[in-house]
Image 1 (cartoon, one colour):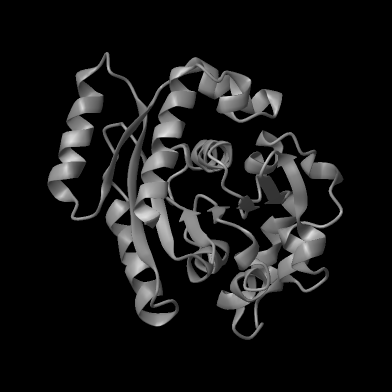
Image 2: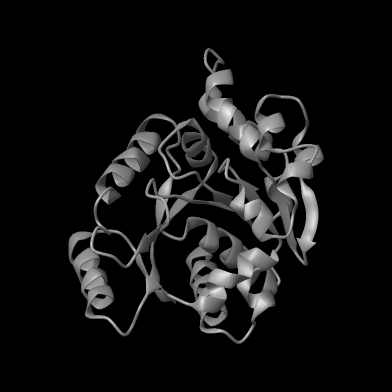
Length: 254
């Protein structure tokens, strides 16, 4: 049965989408079969795999409204071993359309149950807010991976996110756990990055991955070409870092 990991943090700009794209691609490079689910209405994960988000017929929006099946929503093999359920700006209206829908917290989970055995990992990219889409991701997932940017306010909001994860675990999904925290945009030239890492380690009782994702120009360029970093620049520091993170995730699975 495939492992389902939600990549979540209600703060924007911390590297959720970058991590969802590149972790998925590096897991696929190691021979794992991956499904990526884009639940962020900005659709950056969708376009980051080279999919034209404005010209897709079925997205997660149609899926959760019951207008298509999950198999109809999957775009297969956008790169070798990676398929994706895309999204676009239409998803922003889903919150309103789901008002009054029974058990709306489980809409995504009920669909994913049909296909989860077909994949080694299902990676869900969450929006930068703790809304119904994020709750759906957390009721579907077995664990939550939290990217944290190496900046002064890194810990701000983290306690709220952990509180939300604990609430979902208590009330909606008893199987949900913290996969761990991964540091992004690490700059080894500054003392601040090292201080943030030490500060979080001192204040957090959850797993922290050894891999540090560097601040890397090639990593920032790759999405504009619709490619994960390990395809865009396989020898870059960013590609090596995400390969290392993928290996840690695989070892977590054993």
